[in-house]
Length: 252
Figure 1 (cartoon, one colour):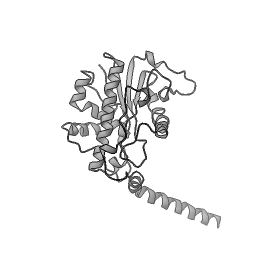
Figure 2: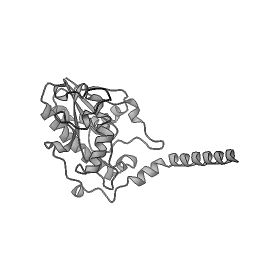
Figure 3: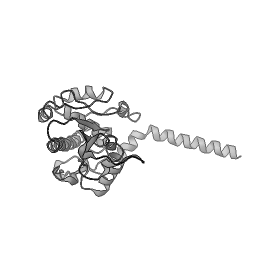
Figure 4: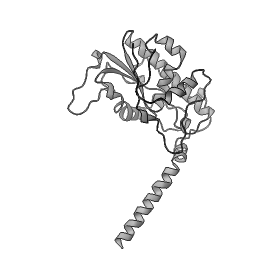
């Protein structure tokens, strides 16, 4: 009898997991669906990157970018020979097309789940800069639309401005790493495919790229790759580069 009950429970659990997996795309879309159409006028206010609170991590302060493994001493990022510009993945699950950078709970989640885990991989060699940005809703990627494209472009505009502040803060002549994951990887890579950014950073990005893992390109079954449809001549090179595996490093 007990074996029959156990077998029934196992079969039921397997069936539920299978159904969940098969409907994962629909579940994601429903749980991350923004309310209404994208409207730039009602988007969260843009962050001011001259304000330290607009950053998840900065090298001159103790923050989420300073975590180390047990037994290791905290590195002094202010003496690091290299800088890293890290763009975090999606952590926003709200009802808007873009997440605010002033939401304390969202910022705590981003710091703990992203900066604290991923950006800290670089703090033994680099000064860590990790901006907050008005990240696009997951709906923008799982259910492509014109509204989603506008949300992604808004997020990119923040990253672009943060990158300009990053270069101003660190000064010329220092090598840097451009790092990101998921949404952050896509936005960071777009920096190197926009002509205005190449000019803004001079020649430092002449052979630049993105520090990322090849398996970052994996996605749930049934969900197709998402690259925004934007009116930009560099979109096609961006798509080609996103399909190229392997880590790359920026520097002079």
